[in-house]
Image (cartoon, rainbow, N blue to C red; front, side, top):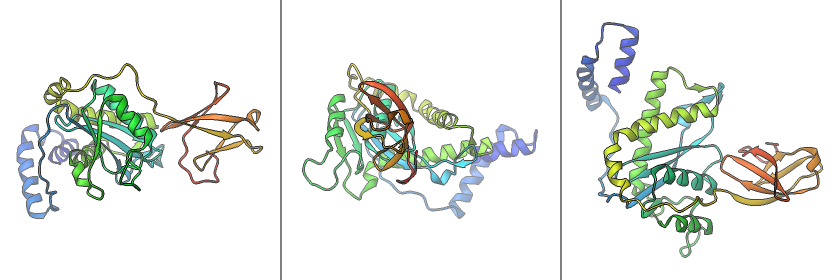
Length: 296
């Protein structure tokens, strides 16, 4: 982007490139892209009424080569967009496209926006759809989540992801904005996950400020939120083996030896496991993403 090039020139050659040359640089970049740049995406804009539709999707972030303490950080982003105002919300997700990540991200988005749209659209997320049957297509948990917020669930046709265009096209511009911010930052390594999440949050808030006027209009048309959130976890049971481990969804976790032989009630969130014994919280573990056979 021209602004990125200008900032680089200003850093390398102080006093030589004032801000006033930005328009000239933008024209040169625009001309170069027209003659030498890659093909542009072709799309047909859709008209959306305020408060009518919100869209959810997950997007891969591997191409940005993020590292945490110099270790590659495997993750995706949950991305929510209000179609009318283009107001956005993001969540950093390490556990994959599961219902817990969808529920947490969607609910955080709705509570941050201060209301719920009438319609919630996604593509064929396995977290929300059975995808193997034509009837009773929503999962029970996703249906309950929609009902809790008074939203109607819709999705684009299978295999036609561009019908989710308001969020699909936003993925590219969002990742481009994050990439540009990383270029200005000078490196892609973060001290911890929280620092990276804060960096992503700042990026989306800058985008939301540009759409503030449209969001104020849309906010007036959103449905009121319920008194409380719905659950964003699922419960499973797991027995602690004599090896002081237990397994949840084919991932092996370690446990204190005092829990050997006991059966735990496990609340599975998008980022962690909370383990209960007779109603008391006895153990919390980060949710694992490693292959079966390795303790997490």
